[in-house]
Length: 479
Image (cartoon, rainbow, N blue to C red; front, side, top):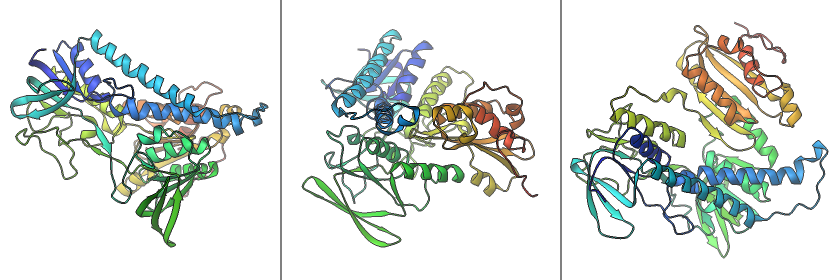
């Protein structure tokens, strides 16, 4: 093994492995350090996202939705099925197989691109030296011209509900329950809490979601969040806002949770409890005292717009730095940094990074909410159209939700797009592309959309911003 590299990446998650591949494509001698061991006790690339995050949770979301449809949603289509059995073990094995195939694929890509995978941990020291501790063997000191920090994040712990991965679990433990809990508590009504709560709710759990703040999905456009909450509640999720957990106690195979809400002190007993209150940057052991890399007050690594730290030749990406903790953000930052190292002109447009919640209906957004634009004092206009007015949505039996645009009143530029409904994760990309190219609402109004398609709701919402919608009745706003 060489001791000198052009680039060393610490972390093999979405940002790290993509950065490694792109660096190698550009002709750089590249090494990627990753310590993760999978469920089969094998070294694994892909980080949290592929191993215990994005991918396995989506596998369970899709499997659980198919079970729900079989149990209760197909009768309207004239398909009657009685006595469907849940084989949880097979469902979990399918999830694990998908994970292993994808992580194994990254290992093959490393070989194809001649990326050196160093299995173990890495710590940045002064002078762009990296102390590498192999999973087996003695510590080695490596040298690089450039270092990319991509160690990712870990779940936030809260003292009032200490995770034991048995009765009280984090997002990782919630992927592998050996049976469906009769009563499931979830602390946190964010992306992770809603997705995991939905999985087990569809499979038969009575789910109670405890959220400390009074607003549901406060980062999401309020009109969209209100519609989403209504649909989730109709599905059976018991979402309690303003519910601050004050303590918990495991008793045998259950957990008693104490919390306060507007009614005072409350208590609930659950068979399992998921703690999903967010994630924090994983910087433990990543930086030596003399590394010279600055952290902000929240322990994020300080970087500029192209992910440079204040140490020349050292970069940080993904969940370690400012911005949303999203795999696709980390991926594009990894590509950007590789190209910056080679002197190419490149950037990430942080104003056009989409967010998605993969519940059913899905929730997705990009750009500014109506509330953000309103608070800025700028003149704006909005247009919102329900899926209930869309023929393709009716045919699929997916009529809940809407598409909404927020646009600048003077320039007509699209400032934000927001969706709650079927295939929101796919539809939102139309808004991302439009915003990336500086499109106006009129640009979308003049485009031809296939019929019948869910995308027609995007077209109709664009028309609605100027009171031109055809398939919904509109009342012109008073000036």
